[in-house]
Length: 256
Image (cartoon, rainbow, N blue to C red):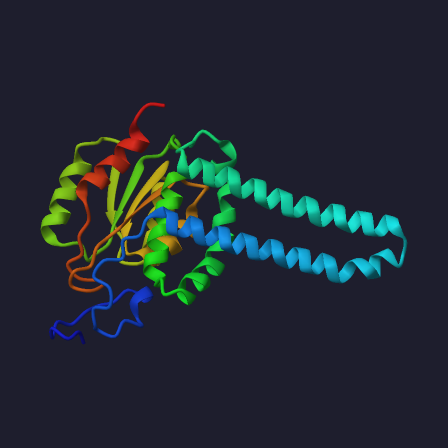
């Protein structure tokens, strides 16, 4: 039961919510995730170097060739990660969506790093929701510009404020290739995606649900996530910037 006396039906991602408003605004720029992910990458490289330092004497005991092989393998792996990361960051910063490596499996590097970046963010006082918001902004920059043969699927949460929902429906009804559905939760969203086979997805939800959904479908299906704002707390009377919704739809529908 919330403090205002209203009964809330919380989504699975919010079952730990205690009814108090902890953060009225979870907006966070994409630079937060990028900076912290760089720190995580640097820590990983340091671990690789430490491993190399510890194992080199053992391998060299078998001959200089073994030492050369292990040095080459670890060096190549570290260099590959660094180059991969730099390409992804360049695509985000300069909006180079044409880089194919960023629009297919390449973006998975950020998904792999996400749990580690989340822990690092928590250690410096950045909440899970703020970090997730930043990650979603990064992920949106890597959404492939073209859509597949299916429609653009717009997914709404059940908690959108009535006037915002009405305005968003009006926007969606102006496009023949847009299919609008309300998804009360992740299970329902997955079923809708399977049933509609969309060419692209514009998803409106809280950061927690968006992270789970983007990890499920991206980059197989291009996704743009629009985090809602929660002036009354989660899962009731949430809002979005409808101009952002329209821009996301037009991004997928615009000729390339």
